[in-house]
Image (tube, rainbow, N blue to C red; front, side, top):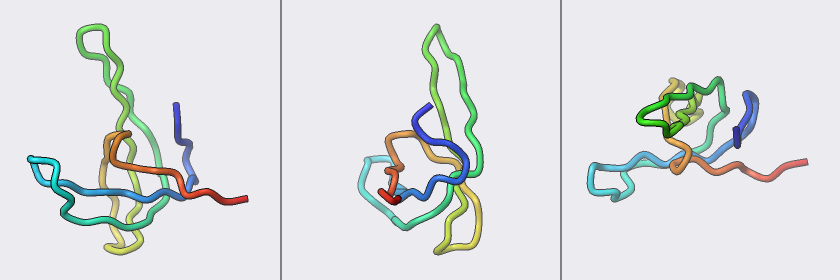
Length: 68
């Protein structure tokens, strides 16, 4: 798993054609692993500081913010 709960991340929300709709910072709350046809997919639940809510993101739509 690439991210753990408590990690500070940058999230990106996209339209269906992969154009960026919104972006901001947030904190990883949890992760869920799905298995489909012998492939594992991980989604992360992120608390979004900008909107004061939580939303699920695929791994490709978040980046860890480097810290100490």
